[in-house]
Amino acid sequence: MNIDFEKTQGLVPVIIQDVQTLEVLMLGYMNQEAWTKTREEGKVTFFSRSKNRLWTKGEESGNFLFVKETHIDCDHDTILIKASPVGPTCHTGSRSCFNTNYNQNFIFELEKIINDRYENPSEESYVNKLRKKGLNKIAQKVGEEGVETVIAALNETDVDFVNESSDLIFHLLVLLREKGKTLADIGVNLEGRHSK
Image 1: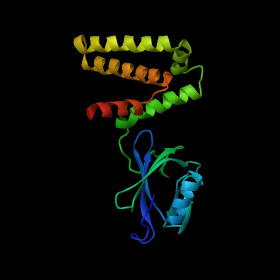
Image 2: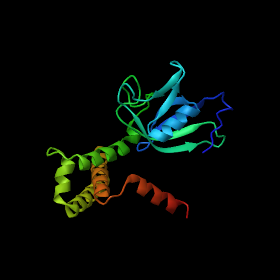
Image 3: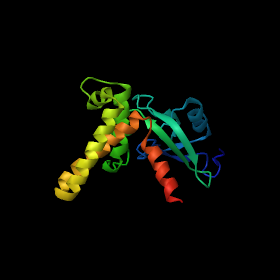
C-alpha cells in the first residue's frame, strides 16, 4: 500500500473506526515512521504534532487501538484503520472523540458483549445460563420470541412490539454466536442477495 506522504508535507490524516461497531473513534496523523511502526506492531501509532514525536495510542492509559484492517483512499493520502479499541478512545474518557449517539451501533456492541460472555462466562450471566442449556434451547428461545413478536405486532402496543422485537434480536444474536456466525456474515449474505 503506497501512501503519498509527500503530497501532504510528510503527514497524512488517519481515521480510526471501531472494527465491530463501525463507529468513527478519532482522527490523528501519521508520518512514514508512524505508519511503519503501526504495521509492524499492530497497535496504532501516530505522529503527535503537539509533542513532535511518535505516540502510540494507549502508551500511558493502556487504551490501545489494535489494528484489524487498513485501507488507503483513492488519492493515496488518507488512511482508514479499523481497530479493536481497549477501553475508551478519547482522552476525556468517552468511547469516541466525536461524541456521537451510540444507539445506532448498539447492536454491534451487544454482539461484542455476548462474545465476551462466551469467552469469559460468569454464573450470573443470562447468556451463560442459556449457553449451558445448549443449541436446542437457544434455537427454541428464538422461535418463542419470534411468535411473541408476531403476536405483539398484531394485537399489542408499539411498546410491546419493540420489547418483543428486542428480545427476538437478542436471542438471535446468541444463536448466531452459538453457531459461530456474526452480524457481518448476515450483512455479507444480505448484500449478496441485494446485488442479484
